[in-house]
Amino acid sequence: MADFFRLDGKIALITGAASGIGEATAHTFSEAGAEVLVVDIDGPKAEAVARSLPMSQAFRCDITSEKEVESLFAGIPRLDMVVNCAGIGLVGSIEETGLADFQRLFRVNVDGSFLVTRAAIPLLKKVRGSVLNIGSVAGLVGVKRRFAYCATKGAITAMTRQLAVEYPKELRVNCIAPGTVDSPFVEGYLEKYHSHEKERVRAELNERQPLGRLGQPEEIAKLALYICSPAADFMNGSIVAIDGGWTAA
Ligand SMILES: NC(=O)c1ccc[n+]([C@@H]2O[C@H](COP(=O)([O-])OP(=O)(O)OC[C@H]3O[C@@H](n4cnc5c(N)ncnc54)[C@H](O)[C@@H]3O)[C@@H](O)[C@H]2O)c1
View (cartoon, rainbow, N blue to C red):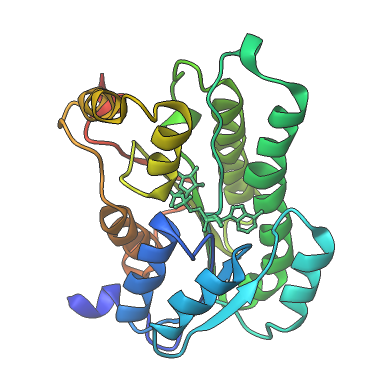
């Protein structure tokens, strides 16, 4: 039974793998036997993660740069799965959102996934590989003062479904939509927007999810392992919420 969840002999490229959900996914995939390509704009952190994993390599790459993504893939002869996890957030209603910030969010969260996925597809088609996008509940429901973030994650949901329809037999494309997860992403948000009232806002974030707590990166990573493993061979075009019940309401 456990063999269904093994990734022995597989090569997994994970963007944003130097931190949070991507880092936890790198560890989980490595424990399952995969060779992990740790891709991140933060080179030293990517190196540190890769050093902690057997059979792993680090690549510093800004996924918003077509040139950098092309040269990254020029050195990758074989690939079984891509996890598009790199992403950034922004707080603000539409009236509080400047065009430059809106475009910055799209560049990282949408253009980045587009460029990496497009570059990976020829390799993935050869092995009936897998693309896993890390979306968000913000791509499924409206979240107050997350106008730009919701827009980018809605695009990720739509891109997942479109690709699943385009390549139904050549590869699998799925999306995880996490609720709020206890990662440096959330810590950064608390520091930037609520440095004097962190504990109060942290309590609000916990309450937003009916289960009453944040998710842990490792919990998202375990779902990522299932979706990328042979056990999920029939899963294609799925958007899977993992959010302590948030979107059930
Ligand atoms: N933490 C949450 O509450 C939460 C909830 C839902 C969805 N998500 C999504 O999960 C993903 C990972 O979030 P996290 O919480 O682990 O965040 P994180 O900030 O801990 O990690 C994100 C990583 O992406 C990297 N990155 C940013 N821009 C990049 C670029 N241009 N090129 C390459 N790498 C880049 C960062 O250096 C960082 O290592 C994001 O897409 C985020 O939107 C997070």
